[in-house]
Image 1 (cartoon, rainbow, N blue to C red):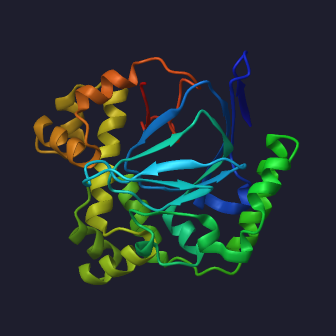
Image 2 (image 1 turned 30 degrees about the vertical axis):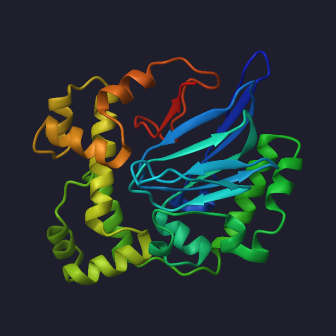
Image 3 (image 1 turned 60 degrees about the vertical axis):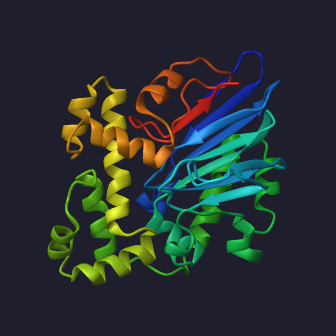
Length: 294
């Protein structure tokens, strides 16, 4: 476990790997506590993973996808977000504590016993999905004495939820991993041929157990790959070429369409100092979040 704490006590965070017995479907635990003097807003980029955020008594407001029309916000006591193809904004009043679980969509299909296309591009209360199984999990986690105890409780709880849920199709899981390895650059018809299914059958099963159609998921992967390259110093032209875009302009248009931001504005804002941990990303070597100024 990795632990960080601000010297003045205004924030802390803990990052840990889930128990090996949970397999690769549970990617990580991120514990956090903020006690800031001002509200905090974050832009959450489209992601190929799903997230479960369990809060310890506060509320988080989530704004509808950027660029989707008149912005509206809904307050949640905890949050599950399926695969998202558009950016959203999360906001709190400066005081927030909880733990975020990063979950592969095929594992979320098992955990929540729900077709993932019903949860794609949606944010819901976990209790609405899990009912009595969810119980007082947030309260139990909040009352635990330390982060290690909280993560151990999550290990046991998620292992129990995984035992009797629907299993992901081996071919869907193979296709999901193949798309990850190619960073979304493999054409859907090639993926279907290698998988041994018709393109339509792959689309139907993939959407049910992952959340989005393969083409939409590939679009997210290509964008995330390009952002990772840009964050490591590649030029826009280089990142676009390696990630499968026609040119830098194509990459810029895709980023604007999916986030509502220009790449230049995003990069400049990433460089602005803010209260809280300097690193706000959920995964290594890939931008996933942006703390908004003001």
